[in-house]
Length: 432
Image (cartoon, rainbow, N blue to C red; front, side, top):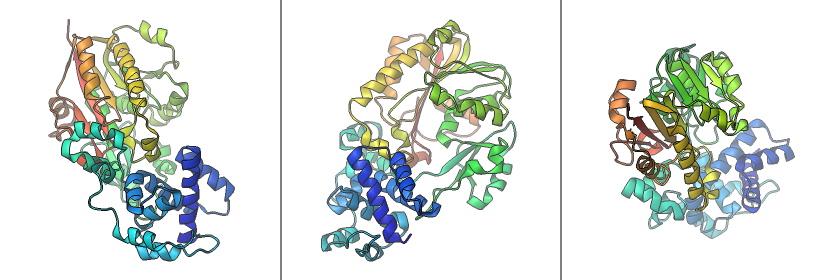
């Protein structure tokens, strides 16, 4: 397919997303089924353009003067396909497989780019109703943080130390430009693609099949590392999902002690079995999903309880940009109520002197520092362990500054740390 046909196809997918309020992945899959003549490269390029348009929906709409599917596809095309404004205009030539020619206004807007006087929430591609939360977290850097969450994300991998080391993984993935990252000693990063390129299918690599590495953002790796799981401990991963942090802790524990992996959603938990087998993790007991009575019966036996809490996912907008615009004000109190319930349940399972680690993939203070403050008010037996000392002990390096300026809890962001947005609070229960 020529560039003009790819831009038109992306506009069709975006129209489907806008009109039917569909997830982008579903709309793209259905377009591919209905257009089987499109090759894998064409489908990847169309998907790239669609996701880039959704990442920067607000700023593109401000640039083009409207938020129609056509405007979004045209406005995203220069960066997505590494094309000039003139090349985009030439591609939209009105032929059968291309968009109608650009109007004079569209040409001028595409050439001019985003107006300098655009509001901060538009420059940051942040929903306007959420901008106050970003300002609470990041102050005058709110737009900068939002813009970083609107860029493409790399593919991060965690080296499984039960089977490999970082040098081996870097070597086998060298052809993809793999590189070591700044913070996690186990992270290997494949940079985000440029233009119409696509990220490599690293999970199809032999090394993945052998269990040498797992796909896991560096921020998530750091959360697992700071949790401090150690050999022979008793550990509970309370919201285990597909098991990324469970696997990381199993390796840190050198397959000793025991990890209980629990999740309320059996569909989220299901992939963990194949991942455990591939990784060679043998100290994990997967609990039946949703069996709260069995969970509570375990009692306060755990050295460590990790809570990767349900949240808005605002820290993962680089990877799931359509979720940014589907988020509604009512969703925040809904997530807060879930977070409160899971934190209080977790507190009952931490033994005296043990650690409770609260993690979200969010950058919103309502889900992060506010929740920690409210939890400490309800649970006087717990106190925050400042992350810098734990970082030095667990990672053996000097810690970075938290993106929100705090010195007790840690907020990771793409702008400051090149990770997804992760919040980490380390809470210690008193010994008695």
